[in-house]
Length: 110
Image (tube, rainbow, N blue to C red):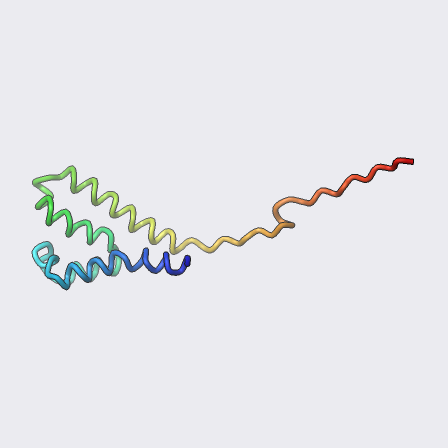
C-alpha cells in the first residue's frame, strides 16, 4: 500500500502532463517540446501548474497574483516530493527501546 501511494504521488503529475500533451493542450503554452519534457522529469507539479496558469490566466504580466500563488504552491510541492524521497526510512522502535519495563512489586506479608 505505501509503495502504491508513493508511485501514484510520483507518477500523478507526469501522467497528467502526458495526457495534456497527448490531447494537444500543451502546444500553445510552450514554444518547444523541450521545456515540457524537462519539466516533467525534474519539476512536474510546476510544469503542470505553468500550463494551467497560461491556459486560464494568460501571460504572467496580465495576472501576476494568481500566477504567484499557484506557482509558489507548485514549487513547494516539487520540493516536498524530493525531500520526502531523500529522507532515510525511520527505524521502528522495539518495545525494549521505548521504555524499560517496570518490575512488579512483591510485598512480604509475613
